[in-house]
Image (cartoon, rainbow, N blue to C red; front, side, top):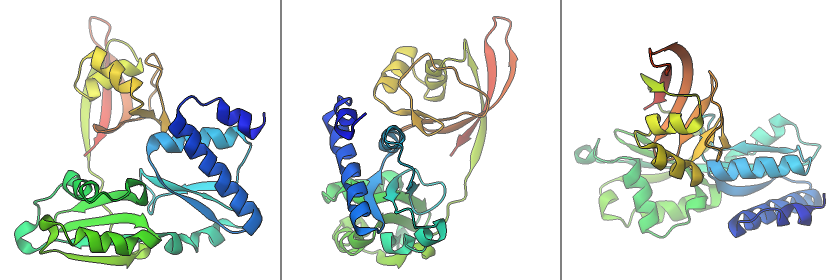
Length: 267
């Protein structure tokens, strides 16, 4: 199948635009024989692009978001001659960290929403920013290298950060979050995805179907829109806006035949 024919098989215009940009990056890379990268992609876009590249039988790519557990990642395409070690040496040229250090009076005051809200309020391009790691004393914001100084300057104009120290740092300076996990149990009538989304998002089956239809649900990193998809032990379900959940164990059944499931929720 030709590239244009593959592009035309996608209905959403925003998907076609993104995938056309990916094709451009591959062409630039082939001509220059150097790394090419996109802006940061969300989980839906990553899933979309990965499926697209598989259709093209293109293997010289990785997704990277600054640290192993990152949700937002850039696509990096590279020539055949590049080794993984050569690619990794370029990470510091692609990504920087913008660190916000809060004053003593503001420590513990802000959540992820406050930091992201500040970026949105300033009208800055969301695709230039990766994950935002929030700590009690501030945040580390992953960003495209050449966008770091702009972000430092603009964030400093916000009232909420007027007493904060804001600086651009190397990727190697990034602080890692301690991953905290809470074990919960859910009881589902069947192993369909919509049942899990309903329980994990604490909403109705109808609302769960709506969330799935809005392309907000991912299973093992792949966007999933099929409500009846069967969930297995070990699957990772991510519900955008609700969190990430690992299906640990099917631990029994109730008298009515429902399945009791042990789940790890990332908090």
